[in-house]
Amino acid sequence: MTTKYGNIGLLGRTNAGKSTLVNRIVGEAVSIVSNLPQTTRKRALGIYTQDDVQIVFCDTPGLHPAKNKLDEWMNSEIAATLTALDGALYLVDSSDPDLESDLAYFAEMPALKNFPVFLVFSKSDLIDEEKRKKLLEIYEGAFSFKEIYFISAHKKKGLFKLLNGIIKILPEGEFVYNPDEYTTQTEREMVEEYIREAVLRMYRQEVPHSVTVEVNEFKERENGKTYIDAVIYAEKESHKKILIGKSGTSIKKVGETARIKLNKTLGRDIYLSLWVKIRQNWRSSEEWIKRLGYKK
Ligand SMILES: Nc1nc2c(ncn2[C@@H]2O[C@H](COP(=O)(O)OP(=O)(O)OP(=O)(O)O)[C@@H](O)[C@H]2O)c(=O)[nH]1
Ligand SMILES: [Mg+2]
Image (cartoon, rainbow, N blue to C red):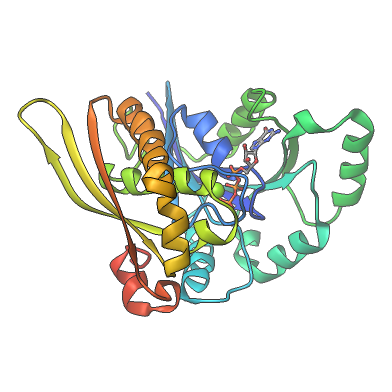
């Protein structure tokens, strides 16, 4: 049987819906999602396999001005992803387009000219026909897009059409992954990301962005439970207090949210023990960025 295999990048401004789309196509929570900017930090690979086709979706962070070492590293993740793609989906939030920022993205990433790029208007459930026409007018000629799609990951609209479009541009090739694999992330990385997602969803802007998570212990116990011990690092004492909450109620909620999702994804009982510690200015520390795996 002739098979097709390729790497497809998910690109676009922060909050465009890149990670949501990858999760929807792959069918598992490969990449975390929130309504705050800069949710995705690391490249995350989601693997889609159907019949004679295997597509590796490379989710990336949104391009943003670098204020610290973490930002610089996140932006470098985008450039690194672009070196190994067969094609890319450039997502624009239909309900919040910003042509100027998108043009800046294209200018900053000249490697985009090396492969076909599809323009994908996401969140189409939030706009009407008139707005659609307007978007097409605005974006026509902004870049040499191979094709244009409107999709809604939430309402599962337009995804089949988009997948067929992607399959058409895939080269022939052997599968690289086992058909039942859906991500290249380790379980430890997924645990850290799920905890960070719970934090992103529970607190306000400033706190979640100063947070990173590290798993200290990951042990299978004889009683069939998996015991996980993880630390949430915050940058300031005031953030630590907010994260813990009155009598520890907030951190308990974070743990519970992450635990439920982990039970489901990892398919076993999880016992999760969470701690909050302070690591001042970790986002500006080369050593900490490296230690936390934000460096390859
Ligand atoms: N209404 C609607 N909202 C969506 C849809 N897809 C994503 N969203 C929402 O858009 C927000 C951002 O989604 P993400 O998938 O985290 O966006 P992202 O592009 O990965 O963002 P970064 O990782 O920060 O670059 C979340 O609140 C999603 O629930 C959709 O099809 N319809
Ligand atoms: Mg994301």
